[in-house]
Length: 239
Image (cartoon, rainbow, N blue to C red; front, side, top):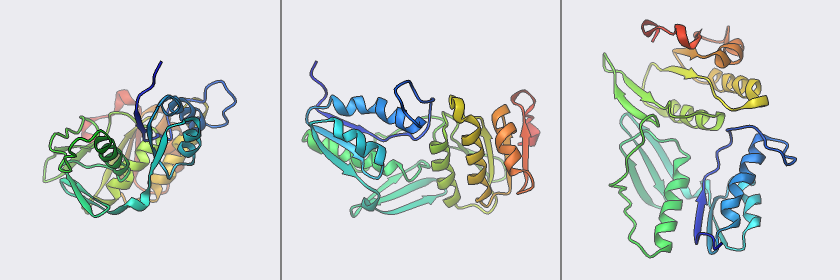
């Protein structure tokens, strides 16, 4: 069958465990799976050129390959109720809290639209941020809640925490649940998450789940204010 003309994919560096096929890491297995999109594109492939995994998978296609790279992003700012990207001299404003990595998607969208000869709306006027992906909620006493509970792996959590580190607030709390489908990487990834949290300036960390309670909490104990609860016993007054 004839494949699609254009394909673009920003690779997640986490998710399910390695599949049969001699892959040494979760990342390699996922990259190989997404590589089928690349393999079957016929004219243009857009990739994250900063990812060695994606660059390797791009070798599977006969189509033209165009890379989007960090050097294309000249400015990234997080404000109380929005995010600003400046890419190749153009400013993009979103009324949502988006991680820096979203700039790859912005550029891939632009390249795809222009490839088909369509007008590109740099205001993204029709953009709707899915619930649970950086959703802003008004809290009590002038607090702001950022809901990023839709899904999680170490890469996506790191991206959101990096964004949160730039968020303009004097006091910051983080409430985290388990990262699932990590199989044999479960302990390693949750301990790595603890190291990410330990480097942040947070007033408090609340962990809800057996995996963060077992692995993340153990690493964080004694390194800052942290509480851990199994899901069924997490109480609203603790939040």
